[in-house]
Image (cartoon, rainbow, N blue to C red):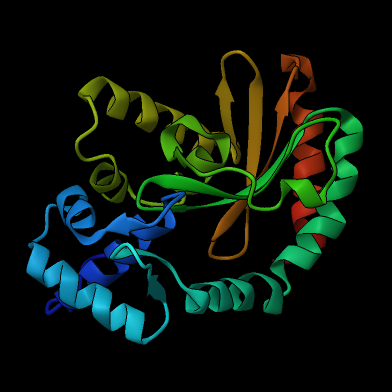
Length: 231
């Protein structure tokens, strides 16, 4: 279980939260807005932002607002491309578009799915890179597949603050994913996902007009893609 250390570094934890808050914005944000969103002391957030600006992980605009800096882009590039994850993903996931469904790859952090790749039918593979923002893990097949690798206690922590009915529904979906070995979400379309890596750190998915009788076939396709990626 991913438990908090006995003596956690709260400054580091808050600093990462500040970075995430900035990364989720489409425009520079004022220090007071960040503090208010995170429910942190303005003076503390101001010190964090100045330190992060010194490291060039963020930069301060002329309007006394902050935005993501070059250091974050370097880290993102190193983690995605230098590791080879995105190059492997593009080679393997791009051909899956022939099935006529949306193809996706994502990770879960803080109870949310971040789609590293999301390619709807009729679009170019390159346009699918970093296309979507955060999405609730319990509403995503990738999220369900990855949550299934965690304990119920860890999942409840991530879903803290959500309605009890939502938590119960998520745990039922996770239980089903553990039993069958893949995540599935049904609604307007059906979405199927399998995990990547041991231990699992990401997931890949197909979503669209998938009939129930075709689920085993598409799960097999996803599992073959995951094995080919070798992540």
